Image (tube, rainbow, N blue to C red; front, top):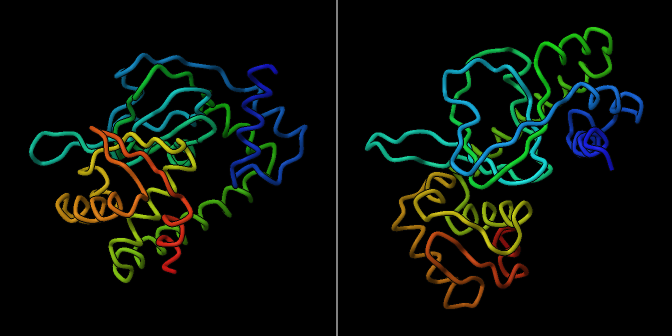
Length: 224
């Protein structure tokens, strides 16, 4: 499979492009090029202009920001098949966080100028983008409701399940980073993880979590 065909598959899995036909996806993927990053190499920094949409072909990209004490906090992980930068590629505004390669990575890159020119020719895609942005607003509203109304075990289980969907049963993330995701102190996260460890739901290693019983974890995520 060619790189352009691989990118078309990734586009097809994203809500922004899911309803497009094969010909439209092929034309969009034909606009892309690839970029390789070494481990620890920065893709962009907070404040950089949003000049491109990215798809992960292989590797892992960490979306990070600086903490008040000078440390780094990971806000999200992007793995193979993930797209990111959709909003920035539309409005061209500054990036709101840093993007760094967590391991050797190869990315598909769709430049803003090429994408906007395509949108002018294809209003159907523009309509899909509007739908995507509406979905994001809904998602953010749900996360806000979740952080206020759902107990910590549910929030934590949902985050671990989401990470498992992208990276499998071995999740490389610190407890501090998990706390940022779910809006809780590291100590509270640690207490809950230790309880799940005793129940055989997961095991804890340095800088990673091994998910051992997804059935039980999913049940917690569903608040069952």
